[in-house]
Length: 336
Length: 294
Image: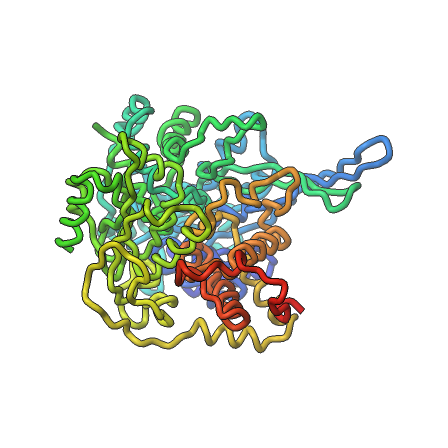
């Protein structure tokens, strides 16, 4: 990995160039990652908490058509959709968001490649920005990442002073991305930026992820699930705000008798009808079972299948929970 | 606070109630609903300006109702309710979802609550429902705590916005709501926190036929939000939970309050204020004015 130095103004010039080329630029706003229309909207603030939602919807939209269909007299005509990924550059991604696409990629390329996701995801350039703030809901350090983690970023920014950034080139993609802009880059020294990252305060480690993994395997029937299930109201705020939750439903929408389209829509495991079978049987008929599924999926099943925790520790689910359920607290209690 | 804890603990000890639905503190500016069945756990109960949730949403949950049948004789449920939450309880009783005799209402003289967790309580952060609150004292209760308090006076920005929308042309109004509903991600947090969204199976969950598309595109979002507005008109008691829970900050309160204003203007009806006055939908009369719809 190499490190370069870039002036903030020069970095913004790069952004400006990308905008003029028609690339999509995203940067964290207060409620969501906003689509940048003017470079003055780019703030690069390390002390901002993550926006209420992540940028996952740009690779995995909350609702998208998979195909169109037309009913003929004796046949059905299928009209496929080719997703053409366009360059999307995420500027100043929070370290807890940067890794989201690569975590979801395991699922979307597993037994069947979801070309709708991969076509978009491969056109992403993620420029992470060091994070210097956390609140009571943050727990990135407990899931193996940190406020200075480069995981998932192609390039990673560390502010050296008000006007200068160290820019770490993390991936080959990041390297390629910077090639047209070498005039703006000066050679950097990793020790300088390390001085900055060393001073960053990390959220305390709240739980041991391996211990949680073990506990979940042994406590499928724990009464703890019932206590949470009594309070949880079964909305999907947690799943939809989550940078890595990826469940979806496929439904057909008719425009008329002869035409329609097949949609892929976000779905959430806390909804009662998520697992409702056509027969009327529901294997997760109680909220306690659904909450247990949520935690197990994140901290055990995904680990079993892909060797990764399905959580980045951003704390969005807890910050936005209408009944103040705090996942950090719950997972910390996943021990005897 | 101590008197509340002692009272709740006694109720549970005497087995007068099966559970106390109350608030516990989780951090400085945040509380969480708790379903307390053990007298010892009442020591964490709180009531203050950070008790935002309308706990009456739990009264219709099968899993909570089941707690009342855990011993030989059916027991009551105790609920700590702000005076505005009592309106929801009244509405639930009137709609035959619960019986007054099954509920033990512990209420408080209320001094207002903050609009969202994490904010410091002040006149600037007051919940919009508190700004125009006319019920600082509960209309019904079994036990009342706290002295009468004053809610800090603040500007009613919600009403200003309603008036502004009222003065818009149909096209402008459509544009306004289109922009707001475009944000909807169909997480149904609004439905989940609503005490009056108690349907066992919501119309949005019906697939054959599919009345409301689950896609969160414009048509799906409009149909969901409009159906919800219809289903709640003259029923919504204005607790403001849907707007608070919405992760996308859609101003749902504007819709619900507009419907409430219309119900009051046209039928002199305000939902959840009295057990004696029949509900608006339940007291339909052919002589009712239909000006509202024409």
